[in-house]
Image (cartoon, rainbow, N blue to C red; front, side, top):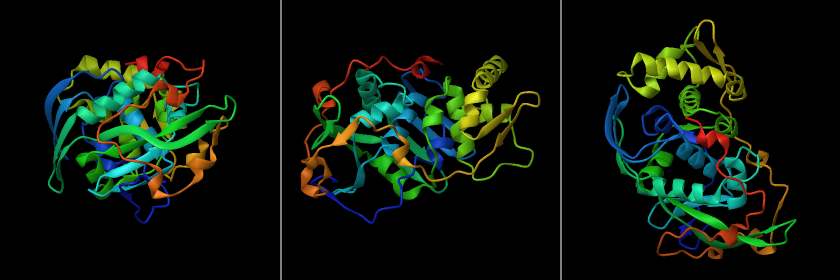
Length: 314
């Protein structure tokens, strides 16, 4: 089921949701409304230079792509590649509450292709983008209700995205509860916490985590604003396995990180066509250029909605 120019590799039991550096390094702005920027940030983990626009909504998409992967492998030139059903991806991005906006999703894909990230740490050095190309695949899935076929999507990772998957420490968790959080700062805190297998004695200090994701030069007003937004998400953070003790400003990890179950995404309305069940590597032909699948190929139904409230919140 991987593409024609893709060689299959020995499969892992499941595909990791993220990597440690993705969640701890200041790669994704801690907001759902990121700005275009050229910035260099140095932390205790190393230095990151960003040219482009990446925020927590982009991280939502990147994690949802891995979460809904149908098949994966490596291209002949060594890039990691994933085959996905765009219907399932849009369902995941909406938190299983309808369908995520098609145009918004592809704008996020464009940013993940165009943004250049340069990571320099004592043990790791790489420069590039997360994604290289997003294109329509030949394999189809049949909508069980509308009886309309739609094309799968093939996503090839860039130099940096492939390198992180190959070399960085893998993290397994369900991304849907994080996608359902209202504020970007809450998502950034959750991802930072989930990058740890264990917590410090007595938990984390909330302000320490805020400074970790906003930077050491953060203003006191920004810390207060972040505290308020995180506390607004306190109940939903419990679904991520994270407890916020509002009285003591402490943060606790209450469940172990575990492998994701990809069948938890609602796929009731999806019935793969006989062609889509073939696992032949010839089933997806490579395209020389980045192409976004046409809206018809996704067959959006009237339930297609504008970006979810989560994507509008700061």
